Length: 346
Ligand code: DP6
Image 1 (cartoon, helix red, strand yellow):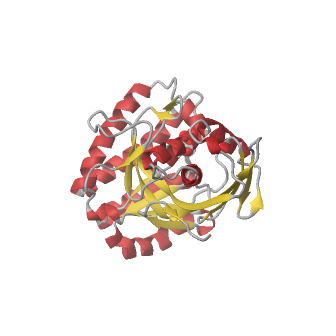
Image 2 (cartoon, helix red, strand yellow):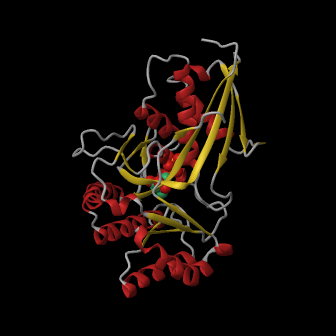
């Protein structure tokens, strides 16, 4: 179908932080293990897509209003993967305008929010051509997954599960679902302060890291560990068990980095200040009996996690003890956030 007029839509979607980590994948973009994350409030991407008829297709990507070619390969690959399900891509030109709420060059991955925003826009535009069906969120999650695995989880607010767990029949390797438990209030307002240790681009990409899991000596053990942790985390989220949550979250984060250190070739993304921050967080927890803990992405930055009721005490300590260990004193304060939003009249 072709249109004489342009069609446009704008979506804002959240980034997310995983507690049980997705690490390792099968074709096409299916995870080797289930992962659980929460969507963030401050770290979000807004994307507007305008399509106009053009037989040969094609796209233009603008980041913060500036034409940018750095993401072209990733976007092109994504469009190729999804065009069978989104026929509008084939005979339209796409103008993609994107911006992130979080500052650039912080070493924070934006692929979860950017790919989910792209998926929402494209699914919405496809749906505008055939209003018979409402937007199907599982389908959007599945499309987002093809752009970046973690993006599959950025289609809802709150806590989400992506990946098959035989104990949870509605779970899937193809798309995420909201955590299938009633999440205790303490985890609905959880904080995630990102302590920026180093903002430069990491030496080994997540995609390369996933690939190193294919022949990893601990592969089977890791898959079992993630299954057990995913089931246990759901239990802790429901019962509000903070001690068990802390133990699990830190073990997952350190296991992720241990997998990188024991892959072939091996590599380290942790930096001296990452380790000092970890020690300080554990020491503060022990000395003050305040339930702070950490998680990490595939990078040197530390995510400081804690319940909302301890915000004041944490902030005071953070300013004094943690900030000096961060690059240019940079900390990004975030917390559990809401789901994607369609922006009207952008
Ligand atoms: C460590 O989703 O960035 O953050 O699917 O190759 O785009 P691709 O990988 P990506 O991997 C994220 C890995 C992680 C853990 C997680 O978010 O679950």
